[in-house]
Length: 431
View 1 (cartoon, rainbow, N blue to C red):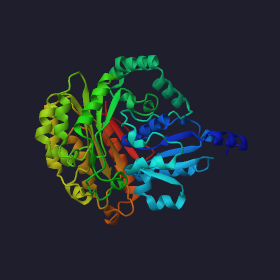
View 2: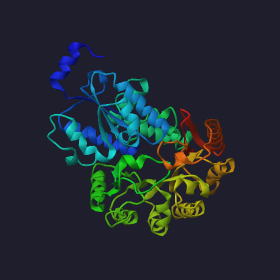
View 3: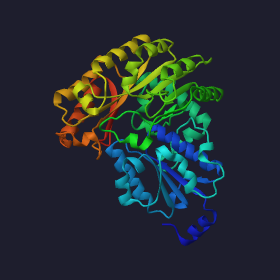
View 4: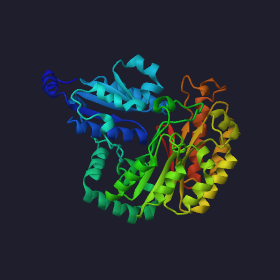
């Protein structure tokens, strides 16, 4: 707790804000926009919570581990002499649980404009702040790795030397993705990518997911605005663009357009740059296969990320995922043939209720059919009040843990950089 003198000196200004985030790329874009909004309204961003008048915490409701971590952070920051504002998905995805431990102010992902009502001395409204194109980078970490990251993020000559060494020596000797593995991923922050948030919200009803409650219904950004943001990024010197969304596949269906239409317009932009398609429900990759195939042949799209979740059709049906592994594999192989340099990322879930050992192995067999370049494997998270929570039998924690170990060994045997993070997920990259 702060001393009385400290509290009085801060209360005179009332404009110091500490920000922390434990969330996905979309919410980190939201965090960066909040940061910009605060700076525009003359708030001071502090990196020590003891000096804050307000603490804004961006939370995540994706997996049980992320939910638990978010709740631990809320409990931690409640102890400081500052007003805590909980933002992100938790206020909607785990509303009842949050109300048991926190009675303060909240901002849901689908209603970020509400921040105008929660802070004093606001002259520029949140909706007046343009979408940002870079993710929030925490400068709060006071450890050695945190210091290194701050230097790398803020001192351009050092960052330039680091990337020269990375690209000319480390990648050639140790593999192109070695620097993304622990602990090096904590030292070298992501730079050089321009994020275009092309839509918000979700239209699907996956039986295990609560995120739709947090992000709300689909709201697509007009193609013209997306093009304008890419043009602005090119002027700033960006050459790598990430098209991001809570689910990128149904982009445009609410405003009379589509993802292939937007991509074709992007391909018409002059200049040398690459595009990554992030976080797509596989249903839309299958639906748009022929159109996307033509676009990928231009070789400007160099990366797609598909949230596949399982390699077994029965489990996919239980998940509420309306596609077959046969169709998906056919589509992804076609994409690889159109562009041999196309990287494909994947999300997978292990231990969904009633999943047998053979069905788990079907998920690993996907790697034999499609050469995934990177991805994440999560143990099933059972969120209350979802359809999946009613499916029996549940797979025991011991069995799920054993399957995660099998998956980790499988990846390493198949020449991936792979590590398990806090027993909650496996992250892997091609060598």
